[in-house]
Amino acid sequence: MTETKKKDSQPAKVKENNEDFKQRIRIKIKAFDHKIIDQSTRIIVDTALRAGSQIYGPIPLPTEKKKYTVNSSTFVHKNSRDQYEMRIHKRLLDIIEPTAKTVEALSSLGLPAGVDVEIKM
Image (cartoon, rainbow, N blue to C red; front, side, top):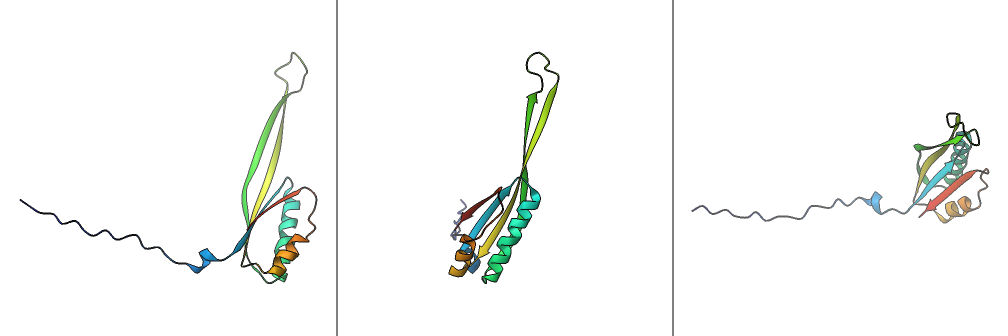
């Protein structure tokens, strides 16, 4: 009879990386026009750099395309249709170790109309 010994299973080692525990602000920016979104990200990056923060980004996220098909005639002619497309451009910014000065500068920013900014801390 053969005996098999069980090996002591060791728990997986968890890498301790200081960067994972740093405080950060994640900013998602959405707009319909790519020129306006690039201008807005440039304003946010310049403001954060002037306040003395480190920035990762802007990272361009995939453009969301929504297509709508509409009958161009009101009643009978189904073959005549119009297609409309709406593109939503997105960018992602990470501000690492923000200071109080950075948060205050970002909260008082004036961005162009048509830009949606979502901030997570």
